[in-house]
Length: 74
Image (cartoon, rainbow, N blue to C red; front, side, top):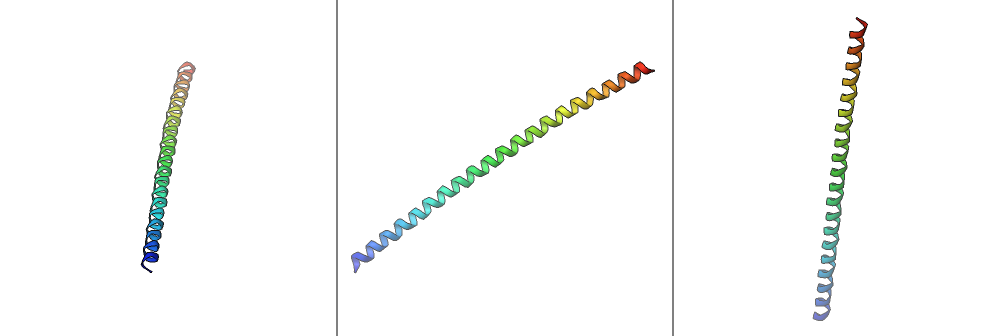
Protein backbone atom coordinates (compact mmCIF):
# COMPACT_ATOMS: atom_id res chain seq x y z
CA UNK A 1 0.00 0.00 0.00
CA UNK A 2 2.80 2.43 0.86
CA UNK A 3 4.57 1.71 -2.40
CA UNK A 4 1.43 2.42 -4.34
CA UNK A 5 0.88 5.67 -2.45
CA UNK A 6 4.40 6.82 -3.08
CA UNK A 7 4.00 5.91 -6.76
CA UNK A 8 0.78 7.88 -6.92
CA UNK A 9 2.40 10.81 -5.14
CA UNK A 10 5.26 10.79 -7.64
CA UNK A 11 2.80 10.70 -10.53
CA UNK A 12 0.87 13.56 -9.01
CA UNK A 13 4.03 15.60 -8.60
CA UNK A 14 5.02 14.85 -12.20
CA UNK A 15 1.57 15.85 -13.42
CA UNK A 16 1.75 19.12 -11.52
CA UNK A 17 5.18 19.88 -12.88
CA UNK A 18 4.01 19.24 -16.44
CA UNK A 19 1.06 21.54 -15.80
CA UNK A 20 3.45 24.21 -14.56
CA UNK A 21 5.64 23.71 -17.62
CA UNK A 22 2.62 24.15 -19.88
CA UNK A 23 1.61 27.29 -18.01
CA UNK A 24 5.10 28.71 -18.38
CA UNK A 25 5.05 27.94 -22.08
CA UNK A 26 1.67 29.63 -22.43
CA UNK A 27 2.89 32.62 -20.45
CA UNK A 28 5.91 32.91 -22.72
CA UNK A 29 3.68 32.68 -25.77
CA UNK A 30 1.35 35.36 -24.47
CA UNK A 31 4.32 37.59 -23.69
CA UNK A 32 5.63 37.04 -27.20
CA UNK A 33 2.17 37.77 -28.61
CA UNK A 34 2.03 40.98 -26.60
CA UNK A 35 5.46 41.95 -27.89
CA UNK A 36 4.44 41.32 -31.48
CA UNK A 37 1.25 43.33 -30.93
CA UNK A 38 3.29 46.18 -29.48
CA UNK A 39 5.70 45.97 -32.42
CA UNK A 40 2.77 46.16 -34.82
CA UNK A 41 1.37 49.15 -32.97
CA UNK A 42 4.73 50.89 -33.10
CA UNK A 43 5.00 50.14 -36.80
CA UNK A 44 1.50 51.48 -37.39
CA UNK A 45 2.27 54.56 -35.32
CA UNK A 46 5.42 55.15 -37.35
CA UNK A 47 3.48 54.70 -40.56
CA UNK A 48 0.79 57.13 -39.47
CA UNK A 49 3.41 59.67 -38.38
CA UNK A 50 5.21 59.27 -41.69
CA UNK A 51 1.89 59.58 -43.48
CA UNK A 52 1.13 62.77 -41.59
CA UNK A 53 4.55 64.17 -42.48
CA UNK A 54 3.99 63.38 -46.15
CA UNK A 55 0.54 64.99 -45.96
CA UNK A 56 1.97 68.10 -44.35
CA UNK A 57 4.60 68.32 -47.08
CA UNK A 58 1.91 68.02 -49.74
CA UNK A 59 -0.23 70.64 -48.01
CA UNK A 60 2.73 73.01 -47.78
CA UNK A 61 3.49 72.45 -51.47
CA UNK A 62 -0.13 73.21 -52.34
CA UNK A 63 -0.08 76.35 -50.22
CA UNK A 64 3.07 77.55 -51.94
CA UNK A 65 1.64 76.75 -55.36
CA UNK A 66 -1.57 78.64 -54.68
CA UNK A 67 0.29 81.56 -53.13
CA UNK A 68 2.59 81.71 -56.16
CA UNK A 69 -0.40 81.61 -58.50
CA UNK A 70 -2.05 84.40 -56.58
CA UNK A 71 1.12 86.47 -56.79
CA UNK A 72 1.41 85.94 -60.53
CA UNK A 73 -2.26 86.68 -61.05
CA UNK A 74 -2.01 90.02 -59.27
